[in-house]
Length: 210
Image (cartoon, rainbow, N blue to C red):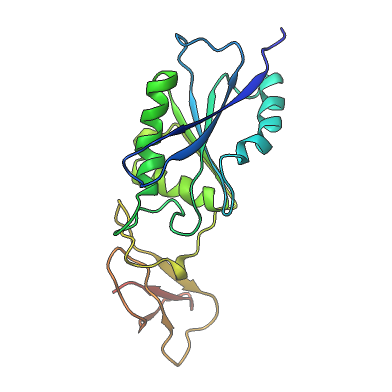
């Protein structure tokens, strides 16, 4: 059976979580009807990019769709900044994580109907955003794909508090060093570099947040 082709719709919306109008693109079947409820795939673009990322990815979605390996879906991508964005809620600025995780899907529901299921996919900065949104609200998403996510634990400012609490663990191969190891603790609470080596019976060094 021949399937309808996919096409891209480009639009704008004015959210409350950020202080600018957001450009977005939606990829959907040409024969989609407003009464049809489809799964939603949130496509999160990488750094120094925009919703135009969906234009580049569209041929891949199309190929999988025509082969029957990708379901009839609405794929949506919103433009977000790299500097001042990075899918983070800024304490004194815009809330880009809230935009992607909450407000943008609500806007899409009002425009295209409420999705029967929601998935996240992102690469690089978008992969980081996909993981961050999924860990914050895991019940919201049926599937998550993070492709080469831009996760830099040592450089994440502690002022960006996660919506879910966690503590990081750092392990080091080799014998326990004689000198204290100094490294930055990545945790929900601000911290400073501190010598906190803990040798284990296996000879590996496990550092943990104090």
